[in-house]
Image (tube, rainbow, N blue to C red; front, side):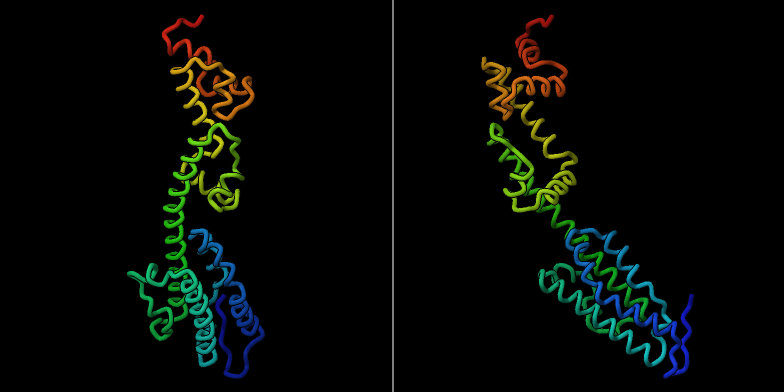
Length: 246
């Protein structure tokens, strides 16, 4: 529904309520930070559009023009502060009209202003997502090296999260997002891969191999090995040596 603008000095109660609602959005801008930090462009845009579902007539006339400037300055300060704290001005500004960030007269109207800051937030979120993915790949390589080296030790999500200085839920999400599998699944795959090598190239007993790949329980190791390969460790060893398994 369009908001009608009454004569100067005689605002309708509806217009006053709408003005108050729009002003209240500036206290919710901080909610957008988490979406940008997490690289969630879709989540950012969804919340941003809900906050600024405002019709152009609200900013008509002299009083509307000053209200528009007030909100512009809040948005400008919010995004400038965010980018300055994280040193993103140069990274985000390349190919983007950064002068519109602090010059309201470069915007044709309120809708263009809203679209501009919305696209800026999406740009920031996309950039953070790329950086997290690149950083995530580095972390995963580091974690995989640790697993290979200390496979015989007790391994847990909490230990690896501490190792890379992230919270367990966040590290788990990043790991699965990049690799397409859970951390425990990778650890078990690594255990089976090493166990196969040991079964083929050594005469170590099954319980010794189980311990060497980080599983103290030989029965559990045998169940896991059969689940992953379709054969018991002994059957695998016999077949790798060309023996007939009856």
